[in-house]
Length: 397
Image (cartoon, rainbow, N blue to C red; front, top):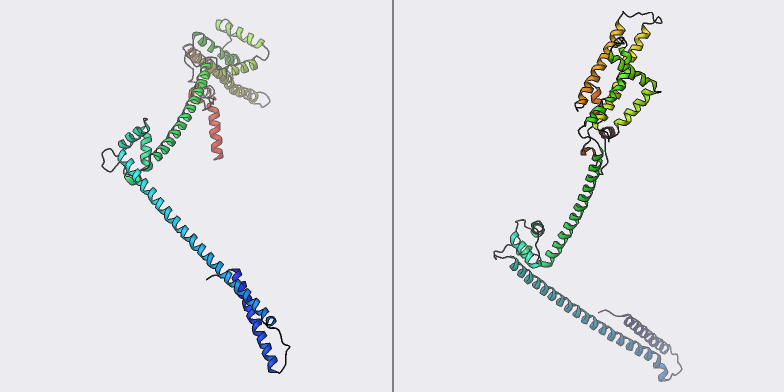
């Protein structure tokens, strides 16, 4: 039995009163034993202190015991209430489980059309469409089947069967997810169409169409630039002034040289024209090739200058007669052959791309433009830039 604080205090007081009573009795006995007389005390005065303390302690103890009994009774009552509540909760849970089982069995029977104990794909699809009054795609039904088919046999048994609300929640999630994917696909398609329109508009500005007659005639004019700079190599072949070709070439040469900085201006003019995408590709191609041919003439010019320096009195070395003339004639004839091939090919509407080394460089500088040269944002990416990016990536790796 457990005692409260008041019970403990009452017992302590009773114990103290008892000890004081025993002490008083012993003191009286001692006085009598030694023949000492004490003054007579009134009866009430002799018994009053002890009696009062004893009665008070007994009363407190009784009250404490009564209080403890009441507390124990209350505890027992609360425990009984808790036990009743647990029993009621267990009974309620059992009823709910039974109701869920009955409801699941009912749903399963509605879905299991042939009552064979399994809900197949077709039965699930038909039941869902009948319940939700809407057509459901096979992909969604297949996803639902995979989500709830724990055994993986492609069918639903009663222990795998979920409530209609679970099917509804899962189906709504699939619908929302499909809508999100559809919206993303729509936005992506719209962006792709926008980029495609942008690329088409840019391709429309690039004149890679077959050359017209005017384009063919204009495309041969850039080859006058290397011809004018290469006339110095034909000094031995163009001695006959009576030749009509010589007269025409001489007139063009005089006009060309009469313009200050004609060579520099022609170089930059052809370079700018080769980058003008509105010009026909054949014209742009020949402009760039004419520049490369003119640059190529720099090599024999340097060789001729070195040879002339070596044959001067400064070095005391004399070349055999006719060597310089043969070299100049060879360079000039090669130039004429190259220009003739380029001119005839251009007039026929074909690119003169068979000149060794030079044509390969021109093809890289003036590539054919197609849709593959545009990035996903519709920006034009030249092959030179792609090669540079690839080289940078290889260096980083």
